[in-house]
Image 1 (cartoon, helix red, strand yellow):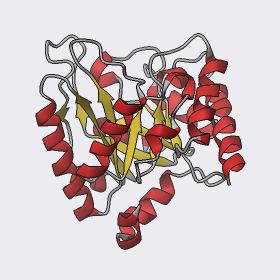
Image 2: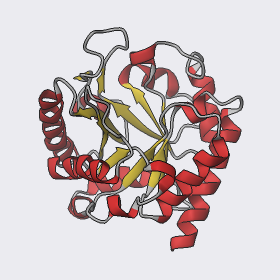
Image 3: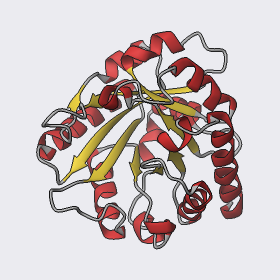
Amino acid sequence: MSEFLTNLGKKMRYRRLQDPESGAIIAVPLDHGFTLGPIKGIDRLSRTVDSVFRGGASAIIVQKGNVRMLSSLSSLKGVMVHVSGSVSFSPHSVQKVLTGTVEKAVRLGADGVSCHVNVGATGDRDMLYDLGLLADEADRFGMPLLAMMYARDDEGVDMTDPDTLAHIARIAQEAGADIVKINATQNGEKFDEVTQGIDIPIVIAGGAKTDDFSGFLNTVKQCILAGARGISIGRNIFQADDPKAATAEVVKVVRDAMKEIS
């Protein structure tokens, strides 16, 4: 995080994204409405945001249009503005396009920005180009940039393979992102092989909603013990029967794992 040492804006905003007890980023992405519409869990967004913050989340990730209606919540903590998107029923659903700017996020009072890159998918060169431009813009405005990096191709690439995850995480670092979000390895095994070549903080994606929540929590724990520095979990929190309780369970696992390695 050398950029944080010389960029006071990034340093201050990054602190607001962290869990004060563990130092980890415990974020809940809630930007899915752009892609999927008002699905369960984000159909009443303000209520869900309140629940996850009361459960202990340190930050949320939303598209710019939702910041205004959330700004009055007394429970509000860290806010990241997601600046890319696509639509699920579009023939170009894997190609993310920019939906906002760092400057707009600054005007909204955000603590960070995030973007999504599907590496290996049609149009990935445009997404990688946008990532590089966003990193430069984020530096100018002192705004932490989270790159959500996913491996995608038409042949069904293994999105949990350690070598693949290490490569796409390194792309984010090389492009100038401050934080990278990637999938966990299978059951969190060999995740140390991912983290050893990455110098920026890694946060773990939650993926599709699982029926094995305890197994999911164990995967999170193993990844934290192997060097991840937080989580960015959406559907497995906001689509839970009790999002507040689900958040609290994730928070406990992250905090306990961070204590174990301290």
